[in-house]
Length: 410
Image 1: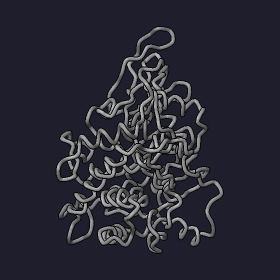
Image 2: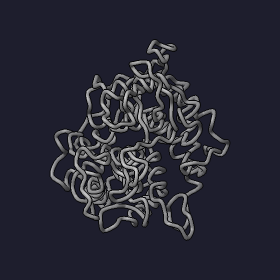
Image 3: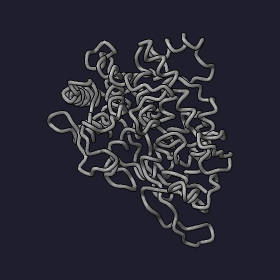
Image 4: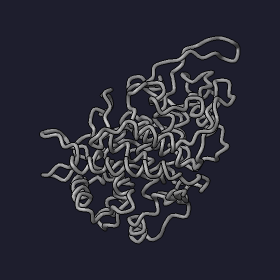
């Protein structure tokens, strides 16, 4: 027996229907679900995925904070509503879990109490990161207060994107500035691809038209973090043919336009035979950038899209986050799954460095299910001993794993 994958686009959730009532109608340019070209899962992988998800959610239920209803509560420190948002996002992708589930209801209440006057959803710090992730969760329920928070949150996220308008400090950037189109952790902070992709994920999940200027501005920033000389006018990409993505166009506000990668540098050979050191692309940011291009509705044959996809094919692996090892590994698995689900193909053919096929086509969802089944602990959790980017928290990485699996069986 083969199990049909779910093809329900996040933007068609009940909350969006309610949101449409509040604002009048659904936008004309909302993207439909990915083309239904993925083949059904076989019995073995479907059953395995269901078992892993069920055990992981059981673990997550056991970790909910009794006093607040949130997850990963840190006493006497600012809360990260985003962690609760990630947990709820994975749980609400379950067919038999909805807003009436007691744990979900308490988690939603926890998130909503951090709604701020500016429309963001955060507790003092990291407003973009927390708002974006919580909106993706709120877009999956049909509560009026959630729909209102989503609408205000969309406006808030768009307001903190570097869009050519003066920021609160009076700084203005035009389309030639390395910050343009990007988004950082907070209001007009130094932008990076991680925060930008979470922002675009939230706008996509909550049904924003893919032709909205926010997506189109983001494409400008994205191509400046793509290590491809053909499309990137930044000096750090001069002559590069990697095709993948780095973290940011600038290391900080004092070094604008210098570029930053969390994977260091790599030696590249230019067209004239000269060897130069260039910022190295890495897995999580390349899948995030690739997914963002798909959400912005770029043509599948666009040079930028194909170059990123070819990097993915040359570096296809589930053993590490390519370029940085096990750092951010479960974050990588989540964006891996979201990106390839958005792309819509069941298989991917790995490539050698010279572009020739390196192996038979791989069913990426089957590979992901097999890997996570191997990694799951007896209590249902997942852990990463390489504690960077908060991955020492088993709740966070387990939530990443659940979301990854949900997209694998989508």
